[in-house]
Amino acid sequence: RSSDLMAAYVNPHGFVHETLTVYKGSNLNLIGRPSTEHSWFPGYAWTIAQCRICGNHVGWKFTATKKDMSPQKFWGLTRSSLLPRIPDVEDEAGQARTPLLCL
Image (cartoon, rainbow, N blue to C red; front, side, top):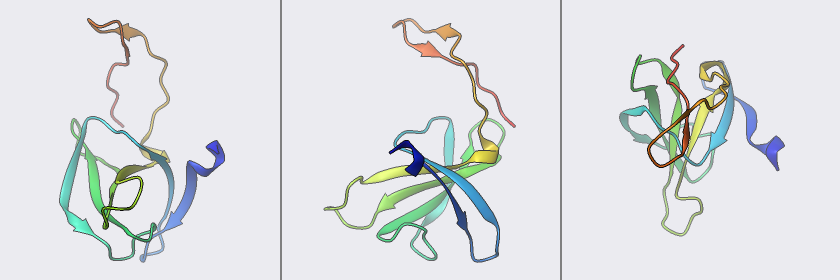
């Protein structure tokens, strides 16, 4: 259900993160090592994700801690770091792309 893609999670410091879960992410760098401490998703370790261009925190990559879990990985992106865009550029393969926008 699409309503399950966005949810609000609270970290141990009391900060609320409205988070969109997706299977793929791009232009992201991972910071640090995966941790299961205080994970919002039991059985998954999180790693901080930053924008590859501007360095802003955009969310986390979640990876399964067991091989029989599905999905093996997904991304949790904070709503405040996302900008909605309409595709307006095509690459050589005819795939729609959007110019990169950083917050």
